[in-house]
Amino acid sequence: MATINDNYLKLKAGYLFPEIARRVNTFVEANPDADIIKLGIGDVTEPLPQACCQAMIKAVEDMGDRATFKGYGPEQGYGWLREKIVAHDFQARGCQVEASEIFISDGSKCDCGNILDIFGKNNTIAVTDPVYPVYVDTNVMAGHTGPAKDNGEYQGLVYLPINAENRFTAEIPRQPVDLIYLCFPNNPTGAVASKEHLQAWVDYARQHGSILLFDAAYEAFIADPAIPHSIYEIEGARDCAIEFRSFSKNAGFTGTRCAFTVVPKSLKGKAADGSDVPLHPLWNRRQSTKFNGVSYIVQRGAEAVYSEAGQAQVKELVRFYLDNAGIIRAQLTAAGIGVYGGVNAPYVWVKTPKGLSSWDFFDKLLHTCNVVGTPGSGFGAAGEGYFRLSAFNSREQVNEAMARITRAFSV
Ligand SMILES: *Cc1c(COP(=O)(O)O)cnc(C)c1O
Image (cartoon, rainbow, N blue to C red; front, side, top):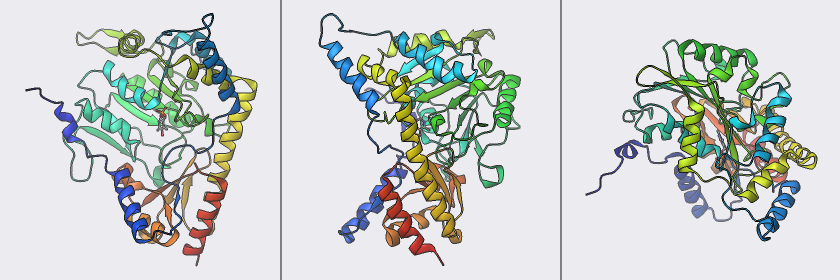
């Protein structure tokens, strides 16, 4: 009889989004005429930049022509894409990253999970609370945790609470931890990290031989010129950080699929015999064994993000969502509701009014405004009393949702 990976049985069965769907469905059954506005899910709503579409149409034609047809590409991604990434995203910002350190993939979600393949079983792992659930669940699947406790936390993980008091940037832990997930601009809180805060993490990691797993999926939303876009803007980060980037949120590639991971060649981990082993060849080996690359067509689409037209179109997309976030912030503030984030990120992190729990506020918004958001407690125990609203929607829907909330909550 085949046995299973019992770690999967520890997972709290995808509780958050199914529970949201259940409550929305119940409401819609009772109120079939309700016009529901969804500001809950972290998916983009605007179409792809024209530059990316044109490049992909051209690439499809390449594939249909014997002279330009492509079979398997390099597992690490085409050099022309990696060169453009390095020039625009890193060297232009003074970061020392080489094209050979870029690994193109079909998503940051998979990279964040797959990266655990190259790390040992006995690392102490730190995540923020609240957190993007992928970091936690992939560690549960890999057997890096004990069972879930009653409050939803897993035994064996180190949770670093982030809240209004620490400006949603985790304090540096007192105990040594080996792998630390950081996400800035943050999903779900919309917070950003200053250069000084990131420097403190890099210094900590270098002192303890830890690795930072830095998720920069939302870097394009940084409007404040003082905020770093990459961990490699921080002195010493090449010795302690892996960075995850994605075309999903800047260029609307959530359904097209392209991302990349940066593994500096200077990065090392400890082998069982105590020797220092570079991580770059391990990740290269992992990817070339378990992955056959991203489609040529999609990589051409991603390359077009870096063309002059592509850059202008991406900037416009990001501006559009940030303006939505600005409207959400302004309207909620005017209604007397506390808000965080939404300035350098597409998420507004709302302090639930009148001390309501995250789920009570969810129900109230659904029933009185027919607006759906995401309860903060779904991202971790410390998210209780908060609520995430996403700026990914049409201007019309955002305005309508805010008008309803203002009517319902203004005194
Ligand atoms: C959306 C998102 C990503 C991107 O995931 P893809 O698989 O590249 O679409 C990565 N990290 C966070 C925190 C996200 O919210």
